Image (cartoon, rainbow, N blue to C red; front, top):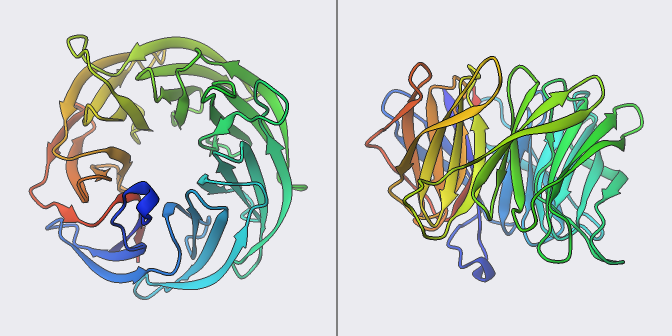
Amino acid sequence: MTVSYVGSRTTEFRNARGKGLSVWNVDDASGEWRQIQCLKEQENPSYLAFDNTRTCLYAVHGDYTDVTSYAINPQDGTLTFINKISLEGGKNPVFITPDKTNRFLLVATLQGGAVYVIRRMENGALGDVVFTWRFPGKKEDTISHAHQCIWDQEKDYLFVPQQGRVIGYPGVSVLKFDSETGTLTETDYFRAREYSEPRHIAVHPNNQYCYLVNEKDNTVTWFFFDSQSGTIQPQQIIPVLPETYTGEGQSSAILVDKTGKWVIESTRIHESLSIFRINPLTGYLTRVETMKVPGLTPRFITFNDEGDRLYVANEDSDTILQYAFDSNTGSLTQYKSVIETESPVCILFKSL
């Protein structure tokens, strides 16, 4: 049996219709979903993550400073609230991930311009903040806006894309994590093109190729990553949109499939998915298709655990789409079943 967890936007400020953090039973054969729980107490549960044992779930609450923890019922997957903490100066947390020891959780905050390291207690509760790494802006008391904090495959280094948003710098920091002390040290920094606004990174299974999606100029940058030195070297920038399209776009998410053959990217406004073939010898990308999605604002995409289904969360049309993914050809085929849920922005899966 598979259970899914869906985070949503809930506030009027975001023009949202979401009700909260919802739990669903998933019928893998039919593609049908049935909601079994919705936790409505916390606003904007906008990004979710499991701990390494998948016995706890954590949520960050966009536009606020809150992080919450939940215990997962091993029988049916429902959630029980454990505790909540607030990150001082950490407005608008956007990403959360556990370290490899399961003793810490790391959170990127957009308006906070920082990565926070939170102690994880043995019962799954959120403890105190043990370390904060801040990204300075162009002037004193300004920031660069951290949009993600994602691990390399060994969970030794953290990649943090940052957006300038006028007051800061667009770029990517590589931070080495000390799992004994919970501290971070910068090993490299890449300054991106002005106004490109780096958003998310996907790391190849070989731990050498990293693919960065740039939100405002609708491109993907690929880097070679040296895990010995903790450095990245940019190799290529490639557009995600067709050359005949002259309108606006906002790139949102990026994935590498389990086989390491394909990169998939989503773009809002253009409402599309772009599929890139990875050259296995060089890492270089070739865009093979850009396909429109039936929906509005595909903010989030993810694979199921098996890697043969892609899910697209359409924030502004209140739907989750399902696609069969062929890793041999890179093709996507949409299933007829469409999940209706308000303002979805994050999806996790767990097998029971």
